[in-house]
Image (cartoon, rainbow, N blue to C red; front, top):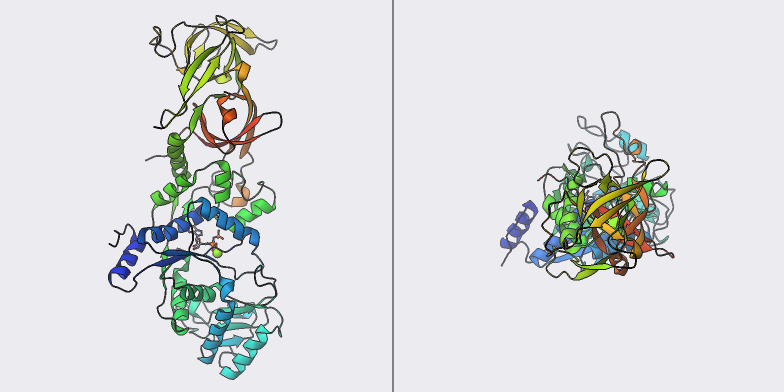
Length: 547
Ligand code: ATP
Ligand code: MG
């Protein structure tokens, strides 16, 4: 049974399977190892590996390593780790450099067919003679060299007889083509650079437009899915596979890149943030990289949910980051245990709970999970609530504790304010309260009307925490400021020290996500020697996603 298609790429695949053009499908994800993967790549990963899963086919991981000056094994390893973390496994791990010998032989084949020539123009001369969209290009004076001469020159190029940039191999196509990519494109260049896999074996490297279709064809890729900017390269892609005599030939299909508002989606620019030290590294929790999101505490499932909700389109558009955050919240709402954390602690003495006495309450770890366990919270003479949950002069519609007022302590009693202690500057230093007997859940006074419910932490067993709160790396673009460089947000990280958490968080392993009641989802990032727990803000509770 051939599955139902759900987008235009799958339409093509289903047609090819139904017509018998292919009996099975093979895709590939082809990253260039010149940086870490970002959220945009997860779109391409989702499409390519998604097709493999849906149609029972194969998907290769092919590193497009034709640019030795920018590439590195560190990037290769990080890319593999990120794909696995997203939950995908490739069939074959391959490198464009695996095909350097085959690619060279195919270039020789083109020369023999009179379809490629060695050109001695400088890069500037090539550019200057390429023509424009309105005017045809000029043919290179080297264009009509004999096959023999081209074979010798190309071999000499390979053997290192010429300096970098002094010669190139060009495909002989059509200098008058309306498609600029067909005007005798360069397919090989001389470049002395140590390659991370082939070392110094080669001093000539194929161009992407030549290496990519060859890699696809050699691997038996049936559908080569790439982003829209390669649409104009498709005629060249087809020219290469045709004239290299491949049969069957892979088909290139383009889709729209994923763009997210206020989000940098270019490895080159992300690298700059790393190199200048604006962020701690590629996996800094603020980075829109897969590794940054993992470090931040975004679940892989939420990222996959997001890319599938964005869908596959043929026209470029920009998605709001609120949708990604919405997917993260939806997942964590079901999967993250709840806990109480007070960010800016205010001392609250419960005068009718004498010192040394503790009351215990059982609470559910996660009321939104069917498999939730429970844990106990203790309440003694001194507890903390957040400074923002008590006001001497409450603003209008204030739903928390005021002088003489009542409020429910989440999961425990209702308390009534009795007195306020001020410090020398007139600021609130502590408040005194009484709990209402039998006001816990199920008690006779549980139904008493209160203004609101607040989270609280018992002082005797509170855990000290520091909260790393993240905001967007970029501030919104304005009419005058559009450049990334001028939009870096100096306040993308705020550290809140002195927060207090219930002891439940001490038991959780590093990496565990919690919902801090009434504030946000946080990841337990580390515990320092003195027991202080560091949390990263994954996403706040407030959802700005507009369905
Ligand atoms: P960058 O400009 O960030 O380096 P790239 O396209 O050069 O991006 P590659 O490593 O060449 O990065 O990309 C690997 C694959 O991921 C390609 O097929 C590419 O089309 C795809 N890809 C990259 N960015 C996006 C994006 N924003 N949305 C969807 N697919 C993307
Ligand atoms: Mg690229």
